[in-house]
Each structure stands twice: as C-alpha cells, then as structure tokens.
Image 1 (tube, rainbow, N blue to C red):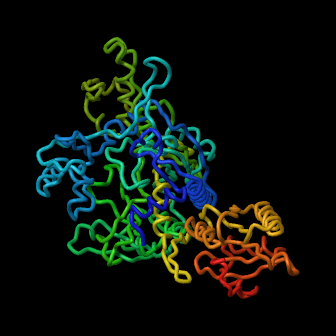
Image 2: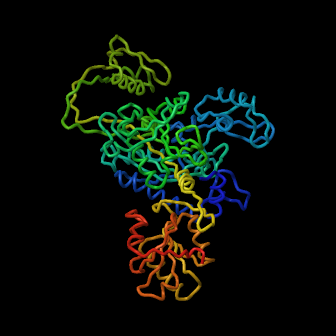
Image 3: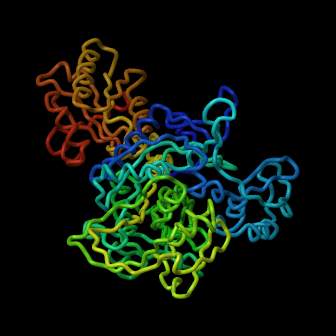
Length: 605
C-alpha cells in the first residue's frame, strides 16, 4: 500500500514524474514526465487507442490545442467553466473552497453545492487557510473561470483560449468528420492530447494539474435508431455507487452486471452502460486493482443540465481504506467520466457556426408526409419592414415547422431580435403540403467516455506499489502489467567480464530487434540492479553469468519480478519465450515447467 508522499518520492527518485522548471523555482500544477513515466504514459495511451479506437472501429483525429473565442462562446465554457475560489484575507493565497470543505468534513462532493451553501459550510466547519491558518469564515467565494486566455496573431490579434478539454476539437470539425464517416450513424471519433485548466489550487502531484492529457471518445448516434452492442459486455460485473446510495444514510455499493444495471434502471443510458463495461474490462487489463475501483453516478448538482446521465470511474489511491465495502473510506479520485450529452454540443455549434451539424439519414423507402410550410409574401413584407423582412420571413418558416397551430388566426406573431412582430396569416403564406421524402436530417446525440491519462498513470503506480522481504531484506517494487510497464526486460552481465559483457550485448540486440523495450545495466552489484528494475516495474530480468559462457548450449537466467523466481533458458529460445510471456500468453509458471529452475539466489552476488 502507498500514500501520496510515498508515490511522489518514488516517482521523483526513479524518473516517473517531478515538478517542472524547478531550476527556476517551479510553478504549481506543472509536471515533467521522466524517462520511466513518459514510457508508462505512452504505453497507457497505446493500450487506450487499441481498445477504444482500433477495436471499436473508430477514427482518431488530432485537433489544435488553441481555438478562437467564438468556439468557447458556443460551447458554454466562457460562462460556465468555473470553480469556487476563496482568497485568504491574511496571506492573500487563493484556494478552491469546495476542496477545503471536503478536507474539513465528511462531505464528498462539495463541488455540487451552490456557492451560498459552501460559504455557510466554511463558517460551520471553521475552515482555515491551509497556508497561514487564518480563518476563512466570512470571506466571499467567487466563481473563477479555469481557461487560459491567449492572443492569436500579432498586436491585439484575435482572442483565443487553450482548450480545457479535447472534445471541442471533435465537435467543431463534425461537418467534415461526418463526410469521412460517409454520413452513416453511429460513428465514433477519438482524440488523445493535452488540455489546460488554470486550477485554483493544484494538488496531489499529477492528480490535479494545469496541463494534462486526455483520451476522449465522442460517439455520435441516432437517438431513435442506434443501439449499442450491449451483448458484448452484458455479463461484465460493475461496482456501482448510484446517486440514491450516496444520498442515503449508510448507503453502499450496488454490484450488478451491465445487463442487470440497464434492466433495473440503475444506468439509464444503454450506451453509457456499454462503455462502463468496456472501460471496466480495459482498466482490469492494464492493471488497475478492481478492489479499489468503482463507478460513481453524478449527484443532481454535479450533472450538467444537458446531460441525461453521468458516471465517473474512480480509483482509491491511498491504500489506507480499512473497509473496502465502505464507499466513504479511502482517497478516491476521478479517472474517467461517462456522459450522455444529448444533442447539446452539436446544436450549440450549429447555432453559432456556419455549417451543417446534422446527418442526412436515408429511409429504406421514400415516405409521403404532410408538412406545414410558410412561404411569406416578400412583396408585402419588404415595403413594410425593410431590412428586417428576411429575418421575419425566416422566423415564420421556422414557426410553421415548430407550431403549425400558431397560424390558426387572422394574424400570426413571431419573435425577431427580441421584438414581437405581427403579420397577417395570409401574408405568411401558410399551408399544408404533401411531400415525398427520401430521408431526414438528424442531429446526432453524443455519448462521451473521457479518460484522464495522467490520473490513470498515477493510479497504476499506486495500485502496483508493493513492499515485501527477500532473503531478509526489504524490497520495494511495482507490479505493473507487462502491457504498460516502461521496460519489458532488463539485461545484466553478472560481473565486469569481457565474455559476459559481449554475450549481454548480443542478448540486448536480439531482444530489441524483436521489438522489446530493454534496459542494459552493468552498474553495481547484481542485487542492487534487480532492486532498481523492480522499483520501476520491469517484469523480467535476464542475467548473463559464468555458466552462460562456459557450457553448451549457451544459457541465461530469467527472473520474475513479482516472485523473484528464476529459470535457466537457452539463448536460442529467449526471444520466443520472453515474447510469449510478455504478450500474456502464459505465466512465469510456464517457464518454470519448461526449463530448469535456478535455486541459488544470485541477487546477493
């Protein structure tokens, strides 16, 4: 088990991640991934891409990280992308008020509470400034927009913002992306990339930063006709923490399969349920501890007004939880979100943009339908309303489609630029037409699984962290999945002997030629080299010893990280044996069964 300090110290010592720009004092919320961390992160991204892009048959794009202001006006980020800020009256430090409430109380999701309630709780729990200890009761709480602003072009140029999520790049490009999908729903677009949020009080290492990586999928579906392939994950077991259980005294988890969660109405969206099942299998595959993992439903105050249902994947990262069945015990962090967003995003961009954000869906056979239409008489509207005539005509046409009954009287009234305009119904040219239609324009709904890559990396380190004792000596190790471990194999010549070093070089070259990531370490005694590789999660180590060069056939010892068991394997078999093992096609027991076990502990040599 591990805590935040232990993880941070290990990460810095072994090159997983560390605060950026420390030569200049550093700035909170920015981290550099070192050699081990960059490799682990890259492997997580590759595993995500394999599951959510390749295996789901989706396409991937890479959009710019900066967009002009109108994009975020349309998306709502300029008005509603805020956190609660409270400033200390003594030292001037700013803090996120909802986090202070969570630290001082048993309240889990203070973010969902309104500002006046949080101000009341600050006084009730006598919350003090974490920096100087001054009381914060009575201090006003302000809404602080989290986006980084920038200028596009020289001088005053054009105002832009660093994207706070990767999703908007997908939504904005939808008119072109739908063409690549041949206008066939459903289809999905993925993107892995950097996002930026000017966090009030970054904390807990890479859990809450100002620059981070997201992996997002936007699934575009016909709300009436498209169903997910639920049978693929119907029997996947989920640990759910519904809103009803969170609000109930003593509420707990609900264990259900994906199909049961849908049938019982726990997860209302079949698409969301499908991706909960897919995500659960993926997290298990890359090494997340399923005993420290759950799906928590958003409380009513957390959920965006346009979202039909939202769930977060959460992991427990402190290792201090005494009761795994108590959902309030431990340190839980959000690592992914799953939302049914309706047509909110595309309709917003359709309103503000200049393109078509619908998909034309062709019927199996043409249909004859009656349509209410308005064909305004411009020879009357033009002279009477001048430059407003076109806008009034458009408003009449729109009203005819939305509310044909409005044309039942002698006059009809429409709203134009905030004003009510009344015209004669006869001038509006209202009528019912019989039309033959080949299809219809559909505004797709969006299902969004959004993953925090950095937080997933943090979770994997926290869940893989272990301590044990080998031959009377304490060992720290990371039991990382072979799929995501930064290095596949470490190769060690036992001592500084020319023959051993030559063979070790040949083994390294062969393994690298086979596509494996290999560390070659000849520094220090063999025990310390094993410990270094154990601590960064390298699954297998190969040692070239004297027997390797003195007997035929040429052999090396292969050591398993988790058990420290060793076997002697012929060099000619090494690439195949290790490749099979690392691809998950068997356990180390398979090597123990096929080759001679090494009982002598060379780790102390």
